[in-house]
Length: 181
Picture 1 (cartoon, helix red, strand yellow):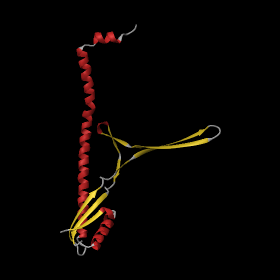
Picture 2: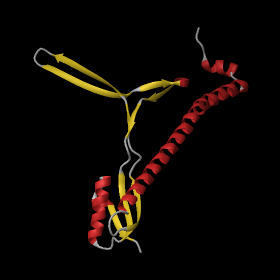
Picture 3: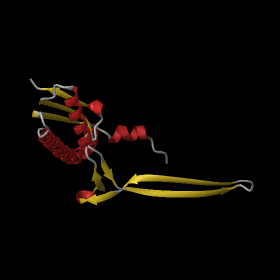
Picture 4: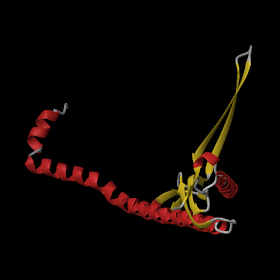
Protein backbone atom coordinates (compact mmCIF):
# COMPACT_ATOMS: atom_id res chain seq x y z
CA UNK A 1 0.00 0.00 0.00
CA UNK A 2 1.61 3.16 -1.22
CA UNK A 3 0.63 6.50 0.27
CA UNK A 4 0.36 9.36 -2.20
CA UNK A 5 1.10 12.57 -0.30
CA UNK A 6 -0.24 14.84 -2.99
CA UNK A 7 -3.68 13.22 -2.96
CA UNK A 8 -3.67 13.08 0.86
CA UNK A 9 -3.00 16.82 1.20
CA UNK A 10 -5.51 17.70 -1.51
CA UNK A 11 -8.21 15.68 0.21
CA UNK A 12 -7.50 16.50 3.89
CA UNK A 13 -5.97 19.95 3.83
CA UNK A 14 -8.43 22.74 3.36
CA UNK A 15 -8.37 26.33 4.43
CA UNK A 16 -9.17 25.47 8.06
CA UNK A 17 -6.23 23.08 8.29
CA UNK A 18 -3.84 25.62 6.86
CA UNK A 19 -5.07 28.29 9.27
CA UNK A 20 -4.60 25.95 12.24
CA UNK A 21 -1.06 25.06 11.16
CA UNK A 22 -0.28 28.75 10.63
CA UNK A 23 -1.56 29.68 14.11
CA UNK A 24 0.44 26.88 15.74
CA UNK A 25 3.58 27.97 13.91
CA UNK A 26 3.22 31.62 14.94
CA UNK A 27 2.52 30.67 18.56
CA UNK A 28 5.66 28.49 18.65
CA UNK A 29 7.69 31.44 17.42
CA UNK A 30 6.24 33.79 20.04
CA UNK A 31 6.61 31.51 23.09
CA UNK A 32 10.43 31.78 23.47
CA UNK A 33 10.37 35.57 23.18
CA UNK A 34 7.79 35.87 25.94
CA UNK A 35 10.04 33.88 28.29
CA UNK A 36 13.20 35.79 27.39
CA UNK A 37 11.56 39.19 27.94
CA UNK A 38 11.97 38.89 31.72
CA UNK A 39 15.67 38.13 31.52
CA UNK A 40 16.30 41.09 29.21
CA UNK A 41 14.60 43.50 31.62
CA UNK A 42 16.48 41.94 34.54
CA UNK A 43 19.74 42.38 32.61
CA UNK A 44 18.92 46.05 31.90
CA UNK A 45 18.21 46.62 35.61
CA UNK A 46 21.50 44.95 36.53
CA UNK A 47 23.40 47.09 34.00
CA UNK A 48 21.77 50.25 35.36
CA UNK A 49 22.67 49.36 38.95
CA UNK A 50 26.24 48.59 37.90
CA UNK A 51 26.52 51.91 36.01
CA UNK A 52 25.31 53.80 39.08
CA UNK A 53 27.87 51.97 41.23
CA UNK A 54 30.73 52.90 38.88
CA UNK A 55 29.59 56.51 38.69
CA UNK A 56 29.56 56.60 42.49
CA UNK A 57 33.05 55.06 42.50
CA UNK A 58 34.22 57.70 40.02
CA UNK A 59 32.73 60.56 42.09
CA UNK A 60 34.21 59.14 45.29
CA UNK A 61 37.71 59.05 43.75
CA UNK A 62 37.32 62.59 42.40
CA UNK A 63 36.21 63.91 45.80
CA UNK A 64 39.06 62.24 47.71
CA UNK A 65 41.69 63.31 45.19
CA UNK A 66 40.53 66.94 45.06
CA UNK A 67 40.45 66.98 48.87
CA UNK A 68 44.02 65.78 49.22
CA UNK A 69 45.33 68.00 46.40
CA UNK A 70 43.75 71.04 48.07
CA UNK A 71 46.11 70.53 51.01
CA UNK A 72 49.22 71.07 48.86
CA UNK A 73 50.92 74.38 49.63
CA UNK A 74 50.13 77.07 47.05
CA UNK A 75 47.32 75.08 45.46
CA UNK A 76 43.66 76.00 45.97
CA UNK A 77 40.21 75.62 44.38
CA UNK A 78 40.97 72.14 43.02
CA UNK A 79 38.58 70.35 40.64
CA UNK A 80 39.21 66.78 39.47
CA UNK A 81 37.59 64.80 36.66
CA UNK A 82 38.30 61.08 36.31
CA UNK A 83 37.19 59.01 33.33
CA UNK A 84 36.91 55.24 33.51
CA UNK A 85 37.97 53.11 30.59
CA UNK A 86 35.62 50.22 31.23
CA UNK A 87 33.21 48.94 33.82
CA UNK A 88 35.65 46.44 35.29
CA UNK A 89 35.95 42.74 34.72
CA UNK A 90 33.70 40.02 36.04
CA UNK A 91 35.21 36.68 36.97
CA UNK A 92 33.10 33.51 36.73
CA UNK A 93 33.82 29.97 37.88
CA UNK A 94 34.83 27.49 35.21
CA UNK A 95 34.77 23.72 34.97
CA UNK A 96 38.11 22.43 33.77
CA UNK A 97 38.35 19.07 32.07
CA UNK A 98 41.64 17.50 31.17
CA UNK A 99 42.24 14.52 28.94
CA UNK A 100 45.43 12.64 28.14
CA UNK A 101 45.65 10.09 25.34
CA UNK A 102 48.47 7.67 24.71
CA UNK A 103 48.84 6.43 21.15
CA UNK A 104 51.23 3.64 20.22
CA UNK A 105 51.69 2.36 16.73
CA UNK A 106 54.53 -0.02 17.49
CA UNK A 107 57.25 2.35 16.38
CA UNK A 108 56.47 5.59 18.12
CA UNK A 109 54.59 6.57 21.30
CA UNK A 110 52.65 9.81 21.29
CA UNK A 111 51.08 11.54 24.30
CA UNK A 112 48.27 13.97 23.56
CA UNK A 113 47.13 16.24 26.38
CA UNK A 114 44.12 18.53 26.00
CA UNK A 115 42.39 20.84 28.46
CA UNK A 116 39.08 22.63 28.05
CA UNK A 117 37.28 25.15 30.24
CA UNK A 118 33.53 25.60 30.33
CA UNK A 119 31.50 28.06 32.34
CA UNK A 120 30.17 26.63 35.61
CA UNK A 121 26.39 27.04 35.83
CA UNK A 122 23.97 26.92 38.74
CA UNK A 123 20.24 26.28 38.54
CA UNK A 124 17.86 28.98 39.69
CA UNK A 125 14.10 29.15 39.94
CA UNK A 126 12.20 28.60 36.74
CA UNK A 127 14.75 26.11 35.35
CA UNK A 128 17.11 28.96 34.49
CA UNK A 129 20.83 28.42 34.62
CA UNK A 130 23.11 31.27 35.62
CA UNK A 131 26.94 31.36 35.66
CA UNK A 132 28.63 31.15 39.06
CA UNK A 133 29.94 34.65 39.82
CA UNK A 134 33.23 34.79 41.75
CA UNK A 135 34.28 38.44 41.90
CA UNK A 136 34.48 41.65 39.91
CA UNK A 137 37.51 43.80 39.22
CA UNK A 138 37.53 47.55 39.57
CA UNK A 139 37.31 49.62 36.40
CA UNK A 140 40.49 51.01 34.89
CA UNK A 141 41.10 54.75 34.88
CA UNK A 142 41.69 56.11 31.39
CA UNK A 143 42.40 59.73 32.22
CA UNK A 144 42.52 62.42 34.90
CA UNK A 145 41.99 66.17 34.51
CA UNK A 146 42.98 68.48 37.36
CA UNK A 147 42.26 72.20 37.36
CA UNK A 148 43.42 74.38 40.23
CA UNK A 149 44.64 77.81 41.19
CA UNK A 150 48.38 77.96 41.77
CA UNK A 151 49.52 75.46 39.13
CA UNK A 152 50.90 78.09 36.76
CA UNK A 153 54.48 76.84 36.96
CA UNK A 154 55.78 73.63 35.36
CA UNK A 155 57.13 72.45 38.72
CA UNK A 156 53.68 72.78 40.37
CA UNK A 157 52.09 70.88 37.47
CA UNK A 158 54.75 68.19 37.75
CA UNK A 159 54.12 67.84 41.48
CA UNK A 160 50.38 67.42 40.89
CA UNK A 161 50.99 64.86 38.13
CA UNK A 162 53.33 62.91 40.41
CA UNK A 163 50.76 62.92 43.20
CA UNK A 164 47.94 61.74 40.90
CA UNK A 165 50.21 59.07 39.42
CA UNK A 166 51.13 57.80 42.89
CA UNK A 167 47.54 57.69 44.12
CA UNK A 168 45.77 56.29 41.05
CA UNK A 169 48.60 54.40 39.30
CA UNK A 170 47.89 56.19 36.02
CA UNK A 171 50.53 56.92 33.38
CA UNK A 172 51.72 60.52 33.29
CA UNK A 173 50.58 60.98 29.69
CA UNK A 174 47.00 60.31 30.87
CA UNK A 175 47.08 63.15 33.42
CA UNK A 176 46.42 66.77 32.44
CA UNK A 177 46.90 69.65 34.90
CA UNK A 178 45.55 73.10 33.97
CA UNK A 179 45.51 76.39 35.89
CA UNK A 180 42.18 77.96 36.78
CA UNK A 181 41.49 81.54 35.76
